[in-house]
View 1 (cartoon, rainbow, N blue to C red):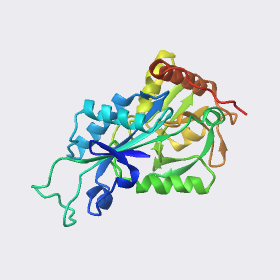
View 2 (spheres, rainbow, N blue to C red; view 1 turned 120 degrees about the vertical axis):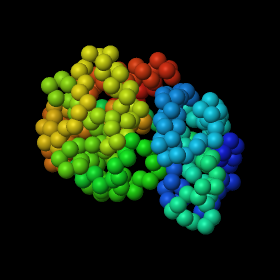
View 3 (cartoon, one colour; view 1 turned 90 degrees about the horizontal axis):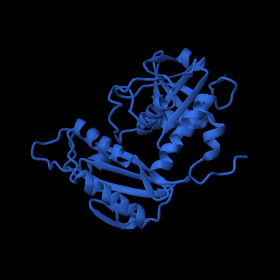
Amino acid sequence: MKVLVGNKIVEREEALVDIEDRGYQFGDGVYEVVRMYNGKFFTAEEHIDRLYASAAKIDLVIPYSKEVLYKSLLKLAEENGISTGNIYLQVTRGVQQPRNHIIPDDFPLEGVLTAAAREVPRNENQFVVGGTAITEEDVRWLRCDIKSISLLGNILAKNKAHQKGALEAILHRGDMVTECSASNVSIIKDGKLITHAADNLILNGITRQVILKVAEKGKIPVVERDFSVDELLTADEVFISSTTLEVTPITKINETIIGDGKRGPVTATLHRLFEEEIVAACGPLVKENIQ
């Protein structure tokens, strides 16, 4: 496996992280995950734009232009022979000696870029059958709009869901639903798509943005507003979305069956429209046999 370190592609064994890198010690950095289908990027420009936006919010300078970064990621994917898979990339603030919470005035401004690429096939069965979720109090910080590598709160929630045999943990602050541990969440009620507004309490997912675009195309009304846990549990349909999950239905939350316990018609339509966007950008999708 080959990885990207700075502007060089090297064997994974050659890639080292300094013990005093601020990303390693403080989680001081930002990241993205870009999806590929048929060896072509899907929404790469949007992901790269968001990476630069996240970096700017924490005063972190990415030492490459967007064009150079795009070409480096494409070369990395080609070197690893990725057809359908993910490219994970992150930028940390770099090495500081000695360790110090304060960033000194003379600290180098340019961040440290690393990236890895893996083949990750689509889970077509999951897109149709869906999964279950639990609800969990959202105890994370208040800048969830920054795609920070500091993910301990997300990890604890996701692991709790895993321990209970669920696919995701749907987070809420008091009675207000925000997002999930590793995805966005939306509900369908009376034919309307309802999702939390893209403010500081959620990450404005790239997949979420595509879904809102195709909803308009499919004449599905969209409402971006807060919604409650009770609205979540009494929704006609619930789905989660992310780079890898695409549009995945949630059929049960805690002990509550959502709708009739199967993927609903609006969720199915949204996923069909989402797939059309992939096909338009990357070519035909290879479908798995649904058991």
